[in-house]
Structures are given as structure tokens and as C-alpha cells.
Image (cartoon, rainbow, N blue to C red; front, side):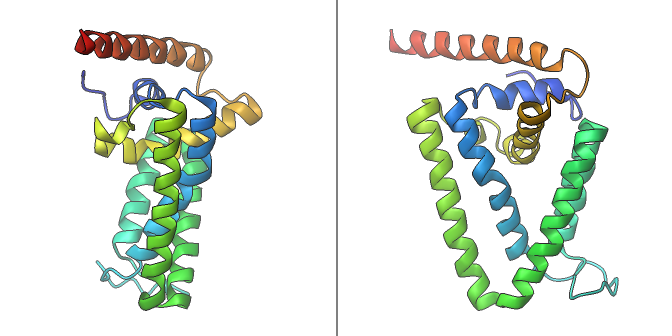
Length: 194
């Protein structure tokens, strides 16, 4: 597998898209990816403060904020318009997740997070096994899959709902790469059967 440049949106999207070409699987991911991120931020609320910033409303400058900043910056670097929206959603998840965590307390929050994570991950694995009939992207590239999943489903929603493209011809070019990746995967799978 060739390396993808860190802000090469077209190749990131094509890599992830090759594992998510079935419409039912895409819909399942649209339902479950952001809740996975949200509940991850809920549990990260309980990590220690990295710096003491005296933030309002019980917010803590901890690993939850660090991941929020990293994800937001990465998304803006991929595409300023959609990335800014994704970054805003990340910060909303962090603030809301911190509030939920603060209200629940650790002893209840970890149970809620565990149940939500199991439910959401199970849904996604069913999407891959039953509808996509291909293992998830995280088995081939864990970090890329975790970084791209929230942005992928947001871009899919923006494209479906509003016809959004980061630049003219983006979806046509990505579709060609996705189709080529899927063909290569099927050929490799066929070779292994022989």
C-alpha cells in the first residue's frame, strides 16, 4: 500500500471509501461514527489536566481537548470549509461530552461509554460483514481509519445533502480511485483462492 500525504484529502478519502462503498454500510457509519467520537471524549474527560487553563463550566485542558485540537486541525488542513465544520463539531462534542461526563461522574460514565461503544462498533462490524463484505479499514491502517472516519461521514453527508465537493471533480476522481482499489482488492482476493 502506498503512503498517503498527511493532507492529501483525495487519497485519504479514496482509501477510506474503498472500504465503504455499500450504501447501507455508509449509512450505518453515518449513524455510529460520531457517537463513537463523542463517547470517547466523554471518557477522556477523566484524564488529568495537561495544563491549568482555568476553563469555564468544568472544562479541563486534558487529553480530550488535545485530541479535539488535533482532529480539528487535521480536518481544516484537509479542506478549509468542511474541515471547519468538522472542527466545530469536534469542539461541540468535547464541550458536550465534558458536561455529560461531569454530570454522570466516572462510576456511571464509563458504563455508559462502554455500552455505547459496544453498540456502535457492533453496528459497524455488521455493516462491514453483512453489507460491505469487506473487513474494516482499521485492520489495514488503524490511525488513518480513526482519523478519517468522522470526516469521511461528514463529507458523505455534505455531498449527499448539498452536493458539496471540496473542489470541482473531487467525487468523480475519488470514485475512480475507489473503484480501482476495489478491483485490485477483488483480484488479490481471487488470487488467494487459487
